[in-house]
Amino acid sequence: MKSILQRFEALEPKQRWIMMGLLLALLGGGFYYVHSSNTEQIDTLTTEVQELQQSVDKFTTIAARYDELKASIAELEALLKVALTFLPETREIPELLTQISNLGLRAGLEFRLFKPEPEKPQDFYAEVPVSLAILGPYHNVAVFLDQLSRLPRIVNVNGIKMSRLKGGDTEAALTTNCLMTTFRFLDPSEADSKKGGKPDGQKK
Image (tube, rainbow, N blue to C red; front, side, top):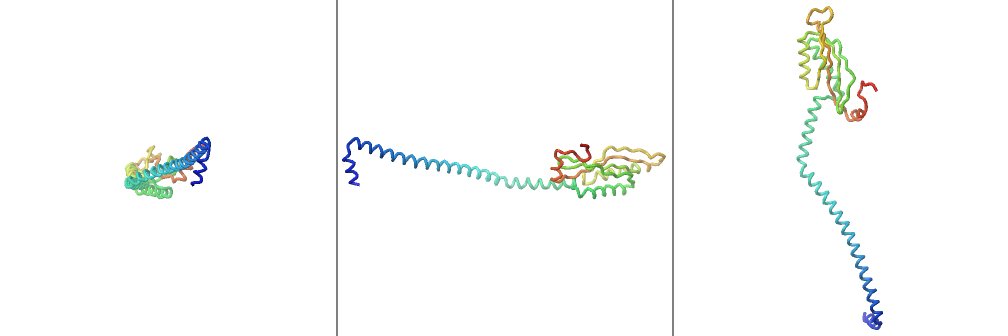
């Protein structure tokens, strides 16, 4: 160390200034390199901390609403169960139609026509229409329609037309024509296939 100082003192003043300048330049460059490197690391870490904080805030909000969301899901599941009682699935339709036919027979009616028509798919359900021609007294028909309205499934009856059979002169000779419509859920694959397509029974 002493030898270096002696050599430095032996230099001419001009050379000393040059050496001092070079030394300061080296020190400045080293400081700038270290400072810039640390700054980049700090910026990276700051960004990561901010992203982690956002994630923490998000999950904290979800956690705070957990009980509320759980209650909402339970309510939706209960509503779905109720909806399923009104809108049967595909496999339940034949049983429902048999039940409706039995109601008519028990009401003392004779089915002259019981014809399922092409289904009419909607967004998440399908209409299941059935053409009916019933022979029997007005009172019996009224009892049958009242029993239909009491079913847990949705059953609509439209276009009711009553007429007497030719040559019939008794109340039992009354014929009732109507269109009965029930409904069923479309499963997800059916609903997807119907999007953009034409309902069954419609001409392309």
